[in-house]
Length: 287
View 1 (cartoon, rainbow, N blue to C red):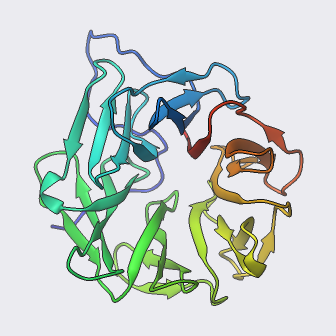
View 2 (cartoon, rainbow, N blue to C red; view 1 turned 90 degrees about the vertical axis):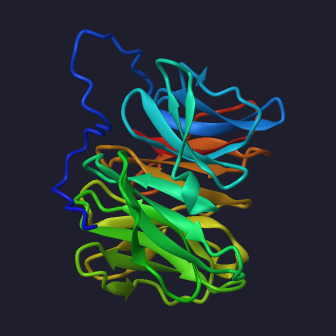
View 3 (cartoon, rainbow, N blue to C red; view 1 turned 135 degrees about the vertical axis):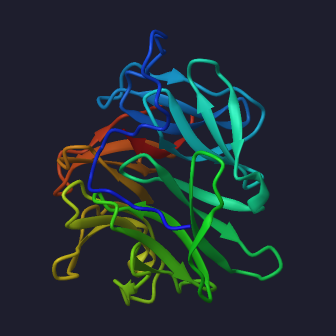
């Protein structure tokens, strides 16, 4: 099966729901995961940190949420299963159950498909990249190579995926996968852990996490010349960056205040603002 990925449409439409029914749309901009009664649950908030709301309450951990529509969020649970949460009904529906252990469900820019990681259960430290749609269609293998692929991020055009790949400790680098040609390009060669990439809305830069000098900080990489620069420089750990839709701001996770909380800065790494203050909060996804 071949998927045709159209040019950039930031609407994230999962189903054709035009009709008389009024849906309970999420007004908040940022989805994230917060430790709540011993489970990681999905919450949302406005981009200034206000209007915080809890969405999920089922007794299982949720991680790496991504927006599907204004009413739906996709995530994986602690059993490496993928679910969609529906705001209207509060229902959580499992997806791609036949694919075994999966991770990093990431919705394409046109909203028609999502990419995900499938782990090789019998091979240590090995996984592949797959693509599927929302209806009854067969998942398509996009990339199978030696090593563990993870941390998927779409380009705004839908033409390529950025991901991490490696085996063992301190061997994970950033790579670029062209969807049409399946060509893979290595972007970094620093022999450190470089993780959690996010592509800017203009498609020209990546923000990511690097433990260069054993210090987890947020870095930026130009896709034009592959030059990188550090955006944060703080004792502690700054990880998991995510772009605002206009490309002017970045939300990320930091423990600089004593626990893992969400912070925001501009695209140059300045004007830092703490957004969450209570229970540990991680895995931001900006709508």
